[in-house]
Length: 111
Image (cartoon, rainbow, N blue to C red; front, side, top):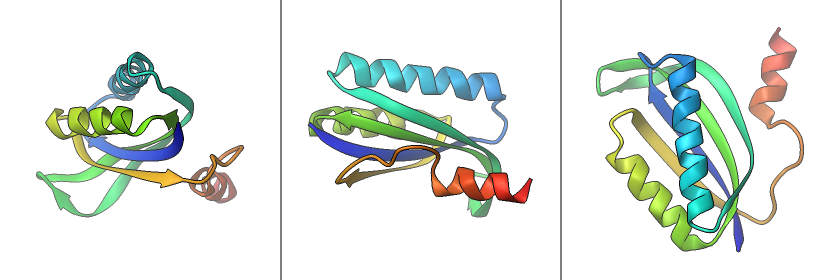
């Protein structure tokens, strides 16, 4: 099993509860594929650098995953088919960072 960080951007017109349901859906998919979501972070509704499918903003979510490669392949496939997901990126990492990500730390500093 390897460690992965997956970031996806959901459509701007989704409510936070719909984004939570999307995260739970992906957690279940990973669990069913013999993987495990160690942590997840909701980074909020943020402005995109450029419009994607007529969306100028998007809900950013980070998933920290421990899973085999075929699980990540299934996750990517599902995200590509889901119309609510504008973009996604999965990166293999040596180990998962403990605590909040840099994005969450800088967000706290701004508040």
